Image (cartoon, rainbow, N blue to C red):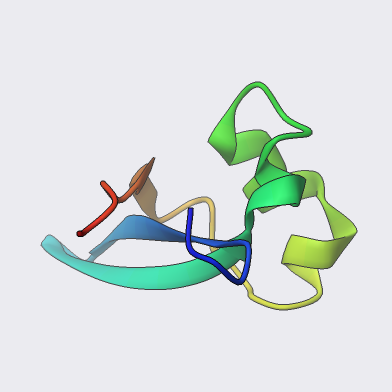
Amino acid sequence: MKENGLVSVRLVLADRGSFHDVVVQLPGVVLGRYERLIDALREDPEVTGAIFVDTRRLVAAYIEPAQN
């Protein structure tokens, strides 16, 4: 986790046979409330109010390893 409490999360999305990814910054305390990352992306008001994730196109979501 970064010093500001944000966690880097990589989202992999499918778009008409192509895949692309984007890294978003999400609050670590929010992610800690959920057992599964997908639940935080779909349900948490703090996350859904900040970003839109088209879960129909979402292929994978994972926390990026911390970089030193």
